Length: 197
Image (tube, rainbow, N blue to C red):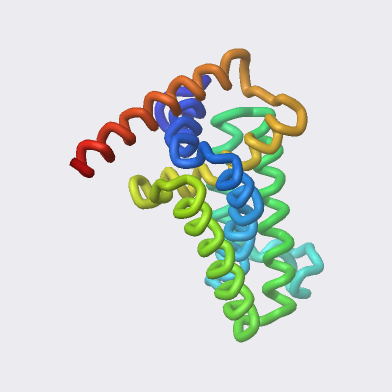
């Protein structure tokens, strides 16, 4: 269990307190990674940091640009929070970067931004509707944008791993998380009721 910046329990509990409804969590499972992926498509068109002389995407090799930096920061963050699931998340981040770079090179800027805009509008709308209709709570990004954006892809991956194979980063993780989420939601509910008076 990490502390400070890489404290998985703290990050997961923060994000989980805004995502306790199963329908809303399922909506996020569908839309969070496409948001990450399509963001990387646009980063393809940022200036290159360095070009590696191998690869098949654009004929010039693999270009290391802001898309690479973006994917790398997320990947490293996840590995430091949890080595096993974080390593899987890191592989997904890098795979998203490589494939989005290839797609962006094929589409070109004029088509890429249209694809990204349509995808982002659709995915963000779905998530906001999930919060409004099922969660009955504003999204986490309204309270802490950086933490919500960084945690979202890892949160949905951990949820999926837990559902599919009962994965826990360490014994007692789920119990600790549920207690923290319940306390956070109770505090939020009390504040909400106080405002409604």
